[in-house]
Image (cartoon, rainbow, N blue to C red; front, top):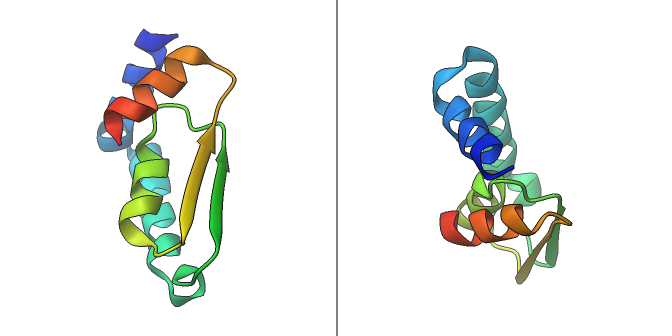
Length: 80
């Protein structure tokens, strides 16, 4: 699973479809609609890139990411 997560993370910057999805997600996070207080929950943090981007681009009071895969939790912690 770890090798798959690394490949998926790398694809965010190399594969055109994933590049567009990444740009769209960052655009959503940068919108005023998400620039508010409250709690942020991400279920299935995977490699952690999207969760770390949420922390970087929003101003929620707290952030919680969960995943049932232990490798994903370790990788997300490393990315964050």
